[in-house]
Length: 605
Image (tube, rainbow, N blue to C red; front, side, top):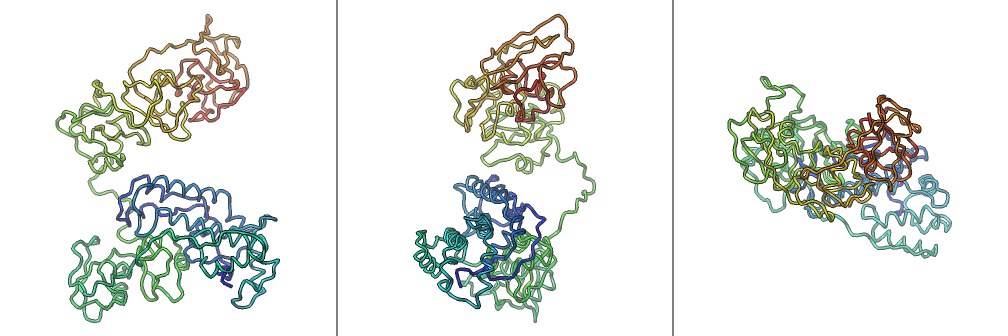
């Protein structure tokens, strides 16, 4: 009964404690791809999903486990489904316009097959809401052998679970749906009086060869090892040698050994005296008859991703395991154990320059002038890469270029940053007083000052409070440089660039000395932007309403949050920076996400 291919299996043993896993193990892409990919693309491909890893392992063997409703309730979570959808969207966005990371496979491949596995495993009856697994088990238990779908009763064929199964496997290229099943699916729809698509989905892959096998055009064997041997380990073939014997003796995976040296699958072009480049050694496992990637991983307490990472010649569907060959079941090569190199210290990561040089172009704001070498930021650069290429620690690089934010997400392409300071770089007044205005990296709202040393491009979920905190500026400064921002900061435009470091502006400030609750001012969208509340002394006063935990004890000025109030409005009203407001009222959160109506907040100490 081909329509049910994959459901005719015994119950699986499954570990349910793992609630998340990496679609691709961190570092796997960079270590295996030959394509040039952006850091954002690689990061998206190697991100976590909130799912049990069983879904990915299951997808690779194209069978479905017969689980009971308790197990399925643990596996089939809303968080997993949402996480897989977000993973796909993030990879599509981050990798747009970039080459395929692996020959014939799109960047979304491994996430999409996992998502398809989730959708098939977690099918539910659209009427009762129950999982379909028990329904399928009952049907298959009544049958003997492989029988056509037409042998089922009309009630079974037209059940919600059968109809959902047909739609699910037809709607993806990651299923066993083919022309034969399409014919059965068409017949079922005729019987049930429904009309759903029946076409076989086109493949999202364009594989032209199977990884791990020598090219058919290579008819002669090599007499020497490849010109470049990454491991540095070479071996000369002697009489009686074979690929399996060399793998076992040298503790290397057979597939990688063949690929590195263009050896045929049957090892028939191995010659006496031939010099081979050996892969990096590892703990090895001898493949047994009927082994699968899932089985080998479980047997050796590995994740599927680890097995694939350490044995890159295994194809995506894990259909090219060869009995008798050897696989790596530990990380190949020398594993760093954290031992410090003799004579090295934690701070001595680079030599200081002996003389300063003239900057070759526009320099980032506040970068030290005591610099012996500058680097111009290119597209795709990030702090770790710049530091590595210029032999400087991340901490020192960020210290001598203080305009860089905590996450190093605001490097400006085309600006120069210091990468080799002199020993006097942190002398008082060592930062440049000759700053240069920069070009906005994106469109700017109307009125934004052109006299700006640094811009920030707004991303999803940004708020004025977050931006002010990140760049240590007050709302008054932020609004003065970007007058399109209203008092409540409701007009931030996604994708627009805003000035976060402009020329000094005259900003009126308010002083608050309060002795009673009557001095308290409520904030609303219509409130005046400048308020003076004064009295003859400054003593602690009672809050005019309930307060959140953590507010400073020496508060002597309060405001009551009414409809429409925001951190930006309060800061503007009282001439505060977000850092001050947050320090006095820590319960609001670092992004001002927990400001509550009817609560009193401290605005003066």
